[in-house]
Image 1 (cartoon, rainbow, N blue to C red):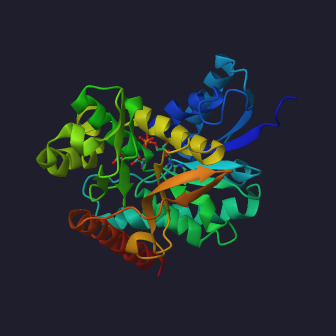
Image 2: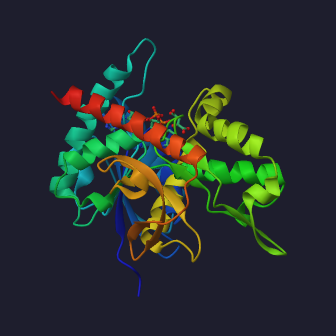
Length: 332
Ligand SMILES: NC(=O)C1=CN([C@@H]2O[C@H](COP(=O)(O)OP(=O)(O)OC[C@H]3O[C@@H](n4cnc5c(N)ncnc54)[C@H](O)[C@@H]3O)[C@@H](O)[C@H]2O)C=CC1
Ligand SMILES: O=C([O-])CC(=O)C(=O)O
């Protein structure tokens, strides 16, 4: 029997990531090739015409899984009945703006969209925040949607995770699908810590540690980390636009694994509400290694953290605590 359609909200749907993301969802990349979807596309009034153009293209693409499109600039209509919310819309930093100005705009956006989701989304709606500052936007959303369980609110660091896999595969000249269990710790910013200490490669001789195969700790501890941390900026420099294709793909990976589960022996990185694991302060949205099963994520426990890593975990936590304080100062 055909499955009932799942309603997926994409905010900022007239933007770059939105344009790359919605056809992926309509094709089944996010929820599977047997899962019908109804897309809810939301953007602000100045983008209404462009949003309608995206809707027209979705109709024209005749996706068999796509059972309906709601394109609207009304937050209540956009959020009504949604099972999954991918929050891509936000206020970008513009020339001459201070961090606090950008934070203040996004705090007010995420505060009001949190309320719309809380009141109108389906029970057990899963939320993924993509828009920067992604971790702190997710935290604000959590604060202002207290009836949405905190385990249902996350932010995207899967793009950074995938970038780390990509860098290792390029360095070793191997298939990216043979590399697993890198970790992104912390913030989706240049303070994040891409960690390969537990990552392995599948070889004809079995699983081998990435560190052993790369055999260049100096590269792994400096250039590799900096490349992953700075990759977003490098793409913006090259394209003059942000990384829409890979961000959209990573958003699909994030939701797919969350809903359908991670394969045995594989973990992924998700920004989730910290519970004090690995001595990360509780109450931040922080990226951890997680496994997922039956629609729930669980932080991978018991990984050894060496002194080098400890400093990096703490540094990115400090930045998130500062962002949190800044966000709260914008509320008063
Ligand atoms: N977490 C991650 O891995 C990544 C995050 N990003 C972030 O994703 C966001 C979107 O990036 P792009 O699509 O390239 O930007 P974009 O500027 O092309 O699109 C943003 C869209 O959001 C809309 N928007 C503005 N205010 C809104 C509001 N209050 N409610 C709903 N929509 C609103 C705009 O009208 C626009 O259509 C940015 O914040 C970017 O920094 C980008 C790449 C990776
Ligand atoms: O800063 C941006 O908009 C781009 C970004 O987050 C990324 O590519 O990781």
